[in-house]
Length: 160
Image 1 (tube, rainbow, N blue to C red):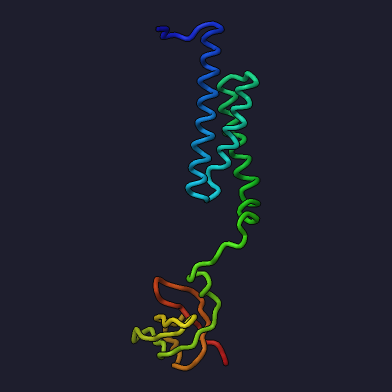
Image 2 (spheres, rainbow, N blue to C red):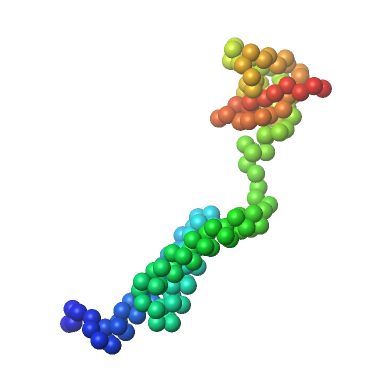
């Protein structure tokens, strides 16, 4: 068994190893992307593909690795913002995100100092707290949700 790569045979073996390496990286990055669906590793799969092409063109390992990093960073910086904006733009908001900006009816006086207050949002009763300390919001008034803190709505009174 040969322990040292030399001559044309050694170079050919190294090329095969690099082709397998780049294909393996492409597959790994694509699998991670499929699992996470977060547009995080797809850019590195593109860089690995560019390095695979460089390998096929006969460039040495230094240039393959350099091309991998350059292409990955370029794809990440220049295409990720576009992809995040236009791919899956109809993402369903969570209850938390949908609550902000909605109007709610206060069902129990909101008083932060007394640690009490409830409001109804989408037919569900939530614990409510005033946005500003010392501001009491009476029952049967309307308020706007400005934030959600844990399981509490943070509200601001609105004029009816």
